[in-house]
Length: 315
Image 1: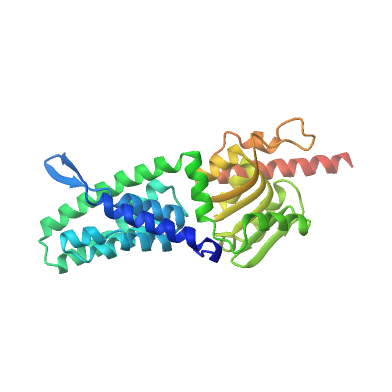
Image 2: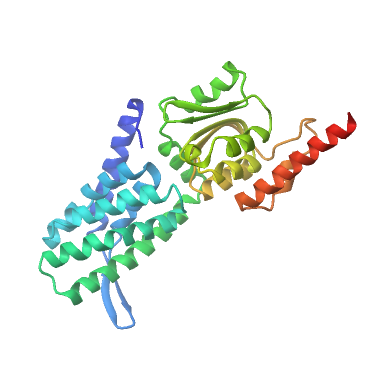
């Protein structure tokens, strides 16, 4: 993730607050007893996983490292710094593909070999290491559930999106490009424009998905004049990282939030209207109950093809 210079103070404040919170909560624990297994659960991973989910793997790594100082000092095991750094890093990487709940759990799974190897090197007996892994696993699951719940709050999801946007240009600058270049759609990868279209509606996105290729479109930045749920489904299908819209529907916002996409908009509307402005867009109606991107793409392509056939017959 690339942090623009203008965001540095905000990024530093976020890192400092999450690191401090991780150290503070590590001082408190809750006793548990499950099937004869007794231990105490800490919530140190909560700020670390949240940091990775909100701001990306790089920031998660820093929070994980500095947020584990108190635990490392109190236990006398310095390797904890590396283990929590791995959790922060990988939770930020996984959330680009899966929900925060799974991102946190997968991040813990990735850290298991490191934790087991370093504890063994430190001289801990195998039964103790097994107990530590079980405890950390339970903590990761609980913390991931909490992060998932936090992210569903509208105000929090908006903050997460604003923190995760990493474009060199501001969202307003990107959206302004649409008007300056008379485009309906611009897709960027890094600092390079990889696709543009002047076609209104969903057609441009579908052509990009077919013509550009998934590998190039993955982790791209989509700037679209209007983003409804239909557009959000197509954008999610090719793995874009960010979405910036002049107009966005609430259904699109909810869908992008559930799929951990960073997004911004200038205007939020209840629904996307058709060109007459009197009714809802037919493509939005078509996918209103659809949550599978591949299914949506098939429906949208069939509808566009049917529309073209009808035009040809009229001629």
